[in-house]
Image (cartoon, rainbow, N blue to C red; front, side):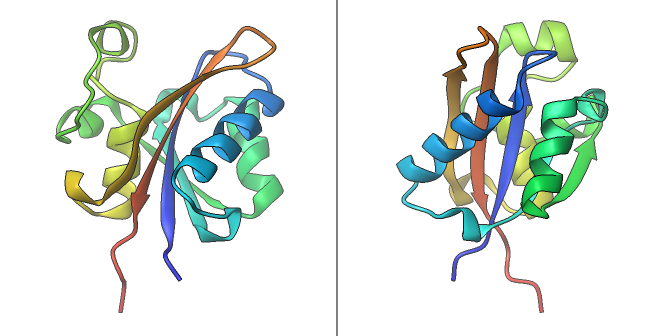
Length: 134
């Protein structure tokens, strides 16, 4: 079975419901089930983001955090000036997924998917196929 890493980004204070819906729609687009997900990755500035912490705990996914400097080194298909201005890196979701999965851009199964929740907050999800580990 394909194993994947989710890269997540979200507005500060986004609800768990917004993140769950963003992830569900992303997996549907990529034709994957929640069982394929093994870990979640994001920027270290989100290490206290309750919805991300709750989502990982709810599903038993490991959670990895990366610095803006580490994420900025990753080639991504959709860099954003807005993200760079606020977070110090051109990408969070795509770069975090690729870095955590230890793969290159061609292993991105879903580029940055943007979702706006009923709480008015935005979430982004990217999905990378994990490298097979021996």
